[in-house]
Image (cartoon, rainbow, N blue to C red; front, top):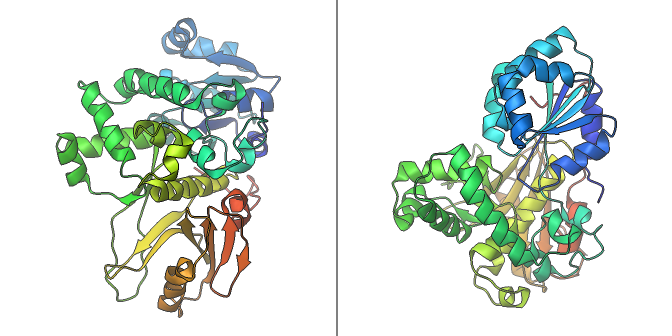
Length: 401
């Protein structure tokens, strides 16, 4: 077991809220985190048929039995339970009694907005970030193996071959989770759609073209993409907007959360094969985006991620728009830095020279070199966490939902 950066934030929220939730993709470590953070709580998994039916058929009796402190795993299996949970915590608002986990964020958030708003502390747990993953003795130390293997913890905790585990993971996801979130009759076509999405990671989203390539309508493509997002396989990164008279591109980018899954879906059979793959740069950019999302979410902060491009060619891969500051990021998978590596960041600074916000810029690259220039700081890929300085949030003064 490894320590997770989110754990102290979950514990802090449990001191002020009667209910705390941890959502995230399957196998990201939610159960392990919650059971370690709350060792004196009872544990119940609603995926077990008997526990699930108990929670659905007799919710009041279920909550009465576990009222002194419980971790309820996969709570989306009994969505109506949250309404009864509201009644229970209104009766007794003692903090920290109920800890919920779930792997379908949309289903949970819909119920929470109706039942538990103001009574629950919300967190999200993605697979381990780079700084968390290296706690495993067998975690990869080179970039290509890191990208190819991905970061799902069970691969390293159990010593399972990455492609074998990812194959089983994706098969289970399609056969079970997709059917529960959305009525998909043609699972083979949906699988093809996911592989097409993987081939577009780090690209601007064109749902019409994506749907045409998959042989489905624009509406179906939008619906299926929402499944990937609600089950935390993909992140949609909106375009950055500002009040300057330029022709900005407004399309969002799509990024897969786990690059190991991308490599599996694209049929990349080894880390060495990735070295010369035409999508290596895009896969690295998605890894950088995912790492920033993890570093922010695991510090209990909203990611606030954007991308930027104008039609004449100026592009910034990632922008962390944090109110009073902008953090610009260029992702370069190569190990050698060139003057061109800083060109877009310099052009962005010039374009927004009258902006009053503080602008910090980084080039995250595939080598080991560190450079500090006027335009930006270059950091090696394995030091990416240095670009994000987590802010400690006090749950007594900050609410996320």
